Image 1 (cartoon, rainbow, N blue to C red):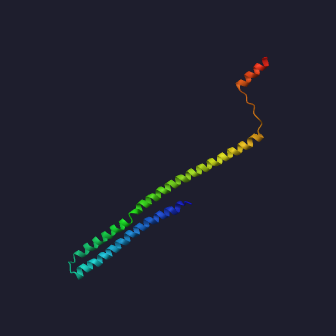
Image 2 (cartoon, one colour):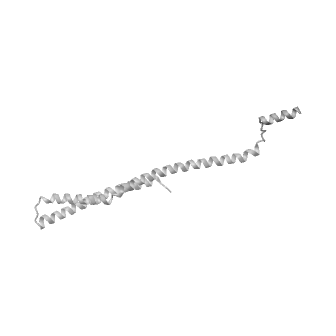
Amino acid sequence: MYDEDSFINHLFFIKIKRIFYIILFSIIGAALGGIISFYLIDVLLFSKQLRLVIIIISTLLFFMLSLSLTSNTSREIQDGYWKIAVLRKLTLISKKLDNLDKLDNLEILENLIEPQNAKPKKVSSKKNKNENKVLENV
């Protein structure tokens, strides 16, 4: 069955996973940028001023990669909160319907019990009174 707390925890861990991936890919990008800059500067003998630029570009590229890999996370989280709201409403409707069923069952029981204990009631109407007067006059 539906457990709201576990569902909220699941959504929380999806958010944590996204942050973890962003940080992980940023670190990988910085490390890869450092390795590429080392190769370009020390092996190919480019100027040392390029080192920082290469590290920043590599870090940004991997950061963008991590964002693209986790782009569906926001949609999943919004869908999850929407599902929670819908399930809350459905639970409320279900409880109200259960209460109505209980009331219907009580009314049925009262109707079954009432005719056995109650005396038949005389129905008096204006028509019956007029007929009685006419019969008395005859």
